[in-house]
Image (cartoon, rainbow, N blue to C red):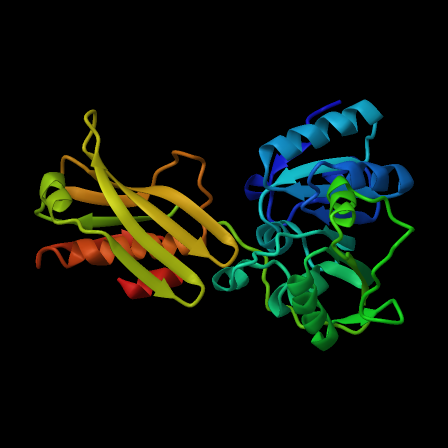
Length: 333
């Protein structure tokens, strides 16, 4: 069997799932599959469907990979990454038939509530990626998180309840996970939610992320790289959902180049990249994206390069911008 494990950050935007599985079938997603027991059982019960398991933990991914291969399942793929990125970037609107979320991290401390997966915004995103009538199932054993989930599902305009009550505390139709059995043994009450995406069209404020041509700015400056490096200080820039942090500079021993360690977060995508400042013999500076770590050139990266060029321009009155391919991001320079 070929590799079934993918990095969510490396998948095409959006992903052609028919090519990934080698067939066309309904796509079912389990977010946070843990040990993989539920995912494997689900795949056995749904040979008609393509199943995708999403997890952050590498040990969990390895264990699930072993279980899938031992069971001889060919309709399962695994992805490492976060749910926001996978859904918004890799999943086109209407590409999923079902989403299963088993016992998501409750983030117990109040100051961490913003990290909880289930939110009004997440439910909206999930609804845009589900087909009309697509299913959303959630399970939790944490009482406070259950109240949180209940409140958000009861007020969401994007889903209808498939049960008589918002949740039930027993579901004998599903395979009980190891975590679920442990929770029950320890006396915790499990809450099970079963909802359906409404049939009506849903507004989609979650565009698929796009890659741009490799971005660069060409500048002319009397400054040397050493002079630029000495004037660098860490900086932060924010605009909308794009946040840029210039963290540190490093100089190459082998060529005329500075590397600026940069953190760029745009919506669900976070990248730690190297922006390069290279000096030609003519004195021109080329500001661009270094390929270390296989970064993805996006509008956020364009904006980061534009901000770096703007900073360079302010270091000396004779520094000029000659040309660039940054599109609208160049307006900030």
